[in-house]
Amino acid sequence: MSTDTPLHIDFDYQITHEFSDDLKLNIYRIIQEQLHNVRKHADAKNIKIDLAVKENCICITVEDNGKGFDVNIKKAGLGISNMMHRAEALIGSIAIQSSPGKGCKTEVMIPLELTGCTEASH
Image (cartoon, rainbow, N blue to C red; front, top):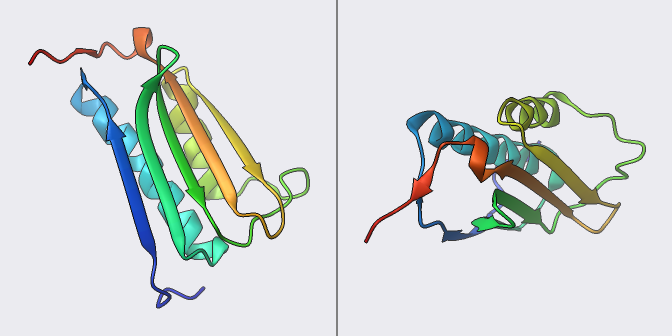
């Protein structure tokens, strides 16, 4: 694993809801795990993180321009397994799109109505 390669992270945050501390921690841990996986396995130079509300769900999308992998062959390692367990604990889902040489896109969807979060007042 090479950790001395410069990494550019583009973070887009489009949330107008209030989250519980527990939900904030879980979102943080999911993103942290994704960044760790990219750093450890992908040899990526760019990462785009998008946190938004879409289709009545909290959507956490992480895309990288790394080496990618065949999702049909690659077994879920501990990092992916941890993200799946966190998403499932929040009645959410995870989708991974990747292929060799094409980077990776991971999308975690967490239903809003089950999180207890509310629209922030301005």
